Length: 206
Image: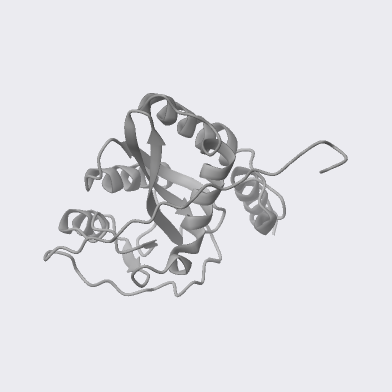
C-alpha cells in the first residue's frame, strides 16, 4: 500500500444508542448464537438500523443482509425511527428474494424489531424471528460489520450538507458498489453478487 501510495480509511467514533423497551414487545429467542454461516442463500437474514449524520439532521437506514453472501437484500431510509422503516426494508427483501418459509430473521432488541406490527409481518411472511442478547454487538456481528464498512468507506471524513445527499450516496454505495463490486475475504475475495453467481453455477454443475 505504501509503495502504491494507498492509505486505509479511518473509522469515526461509534454513536452509542439505547434500546427502548415497550410493554407490547415480545421475548424472542436467539436462534443464531453467533453462527453466521448458513449453507445456502435465504436461510439466515440479519437486520439492523444505523444513524447517518447530515447538516440537516439524522437520516436512518434499516437494512436486511443475507448471511450466506453478505448481500444487502433489502433496505429503507427515513428521517425518523418509525417502525415502518424496518417493515419496508423487510418488504424489499421479500420481494427481491421470495424466500421459502422457515428463513431466520435475526436482529437486535431495537423497539422497531420488537414491535407488534413487525412481529405480525414476520409471521405473515413465514419467517422465524431471532434476537441476540441486549447491548451485545457480537450477537449481530455481521450487520455491525456492514455498518462499519459503509461508514468507513463512504461517510467518515466527508461533510454531508443534506439528508438527500446522504440518501443518494448510500443508495449508490449499496446498489452499485457494495453488492456487485466490493470484495470480501470471507467470500474468497468475491463480491456478494459474484459469490452467489459462482456458487449457483457450481451447484448446477454438480
